[in-house]
Length: 423
Image (cartoon, rainbow, N blue to C red; front, side, top):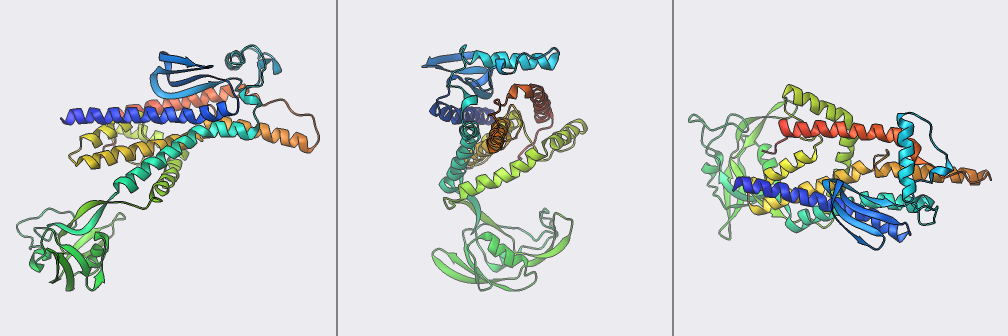
C-alpha cells in the first residue's frame, strides 16, 4: 500500500506540473492571439510529437519529453534579409540556422501578424503572461491550502502528558527521571487550557511561552473539562534547552503535548504566502550556480544536502511520493501535495523571469531594449532604428542552455543518489 501511495504521489506531481506548464503556455497564447500574432503551435513537452490536432491556424499537441512546453509565434525576430547572412564558424552557423527557422514562421512574407512588429508593451505582456499564470496558480493553490484546508496549528487542547521530566529538551525518559509536573497538577488529555497564571491564551505557543519563562515558579492553570472550567496549580520543572547558535538556557517544563488542528486562515494568507515564497525562491535562484556546486560537492562527499537548496523534477517527485505515502491522515497528505505544487509554480514564475534567453525574461529584455532604441531615436529626431535582431544572441543563448542542462543533470543525479528527504 505504501508503494502504491508513493507512486500515486509521483503521478499527482507529474500531472500537476504538466497542468502548470500547460497554463504557463496559455499565458503566452491568449495575449499573443489577442494582439493578432499568428501562432503555429502550442505544445506541451519537447521531442517527438505523441499527439496533435489542428484547430484553425494553430496545432495543439503533446510531445514525448514532458519537461516544458512552448508556443511557436510567427516572426519572433525580424527576417534575416534585414541583416544579411552570417559568416562561417560554429556560432555563425547557429545564428543563421536560427534566422532560417524564424523565416519559416513568416510564411514567405513579412506580414503584419508577427511578434517582432508588436508595440513594446504588447511584447512584454505576451512574454510575461506565462510566468504570471504560474504566479496566479500558486496564489490559488496557497489560498486553497491555507484558507480552504487551513494551517495545522498546535491548539490549547491537551493531547497527551509526558511521563517524566527529561534532562534536556527532546531526551528520552529513563527510570531515574522524575514524573512530569503535568501529572501532579491533575491535567488530563482533552483539557482545554483557558489561561496560564492569569493570562488568557488562545494558542499553545502562548501557553508554552509563559510556562518556559517560569521554571520553578508555581502557576495557576484554568482549564475547561467536560464543559466546565477548573483551576489547577502546577510548578514547571527546570530543564536545559540548546538553541540553534549552541547557547544553552534553563526553561520551564510542564510536560504537555498539544492537539494539532487545521485552522483556516484569512483569504489574504494565500497571496501573502505566495509572495513570501517568491522572495525565498529568488534568493535561491540568485545563487543557483553556487548552490548547484554545493549540491555536487555533497553528492561526491556523501554529506547531507541543504533541505532548502534547489531540486530537480526527480527530487520534487520523490518528495511528492514521500508525502503521499506518509503515515498521516489523508488531509495532511493532500495539503502536502498542494503546498509542493504551489511552491513549484513559484519556482517556475521566478526562474522564467531570469533576464537571459531563451527564458521569458530574456525576451522581455530584448523588447525593452528595442523600445529604448526607438525612444532614443525619436527623442533626437533620428530615423527609426532597425528592429533588434535577437538571433545575434544565439551564442549566449547556447551557453545558457548548456549551463542549464549541466545544472539540471547535477541536480537529477543528486536527487537520485543523495536525495533530500522530508522524514
